[in-house]
Length: 154
Image 1: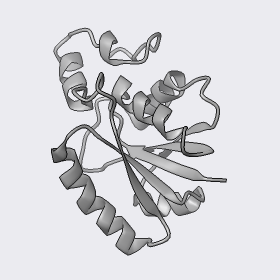
Image 2: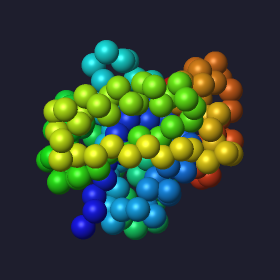
Image 3: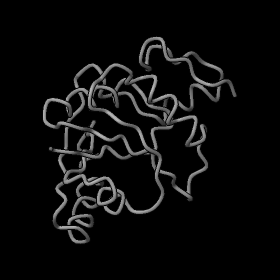
Image 4: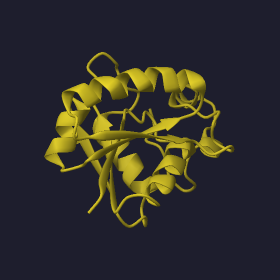
């Protein structure tokens, strides 16, 4: 069974993330969305809220699981027996940062391969940071989120 981890903070999970999950399911039997807890960042939504948002967003996609985690992504991959890490790319700027992380992960865990999946043309401009800023300032983010998924009120 080919298992991949799609790690991130997903604060919040957007249509761009959803697009990467859908693309990933063409390649893997199981995709685990790993919701990381970054101690350096104070999240807008708690890890538990993010997990719930993502579970509602991917409901009905067979083979997708959502798990919160702390620590190194490669150690999480080992715990869930994943041989691949999925990283979504919106731009060349994303690639430069992700390449460095992928190389460090490869050095720590050579048995785990990182795959880059570009976002679809309709979603390449969507970032969690922008969506979060819209939320903080009271704007509507429905057009950036999976239809029918309500966000917790803040």
